[in-house]
Length: 193
Image (cartoon, rainbow, N blue to C red):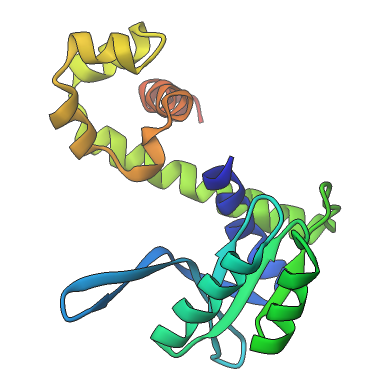
């Protein structure tokens, strides 16, 4: 749920006036990872935001995490969540000047915002399809199409090597199957155009 909500937020950011620049941005100090920002984004004025995404409600720990990660990279802290866990989280966010965008369970988008979200999602799907097509051979694609899950797939291919080839987005099995099917049928579809 968290990763899916994070992808949804990436598509929603332009409607909030932000352009996503990186996801899962790792923060290092002296070669040691000290933090990770869910989404790095910039606004039209060039301000950088360290965006912490919470699929549920943000608690005190989430506010602290957003604040510390933002300070480590010299960005503004921003949390996008479905609400506050309690009054303590709300008060801490106010005290630390952590901006919090609260999303309802259901979000209504304008036609333009919906178009932007769909276009971004489709572009990510195509990029994943190209990466998978370049990484997998025919035998591996056959195995993906013939198996109902990763367990079956790992019986047919060396999963350690297989997973190293895949982009992060394709490590969801349902998405991987869809990508492989799209890659397989795209040449026939393009021939009809």
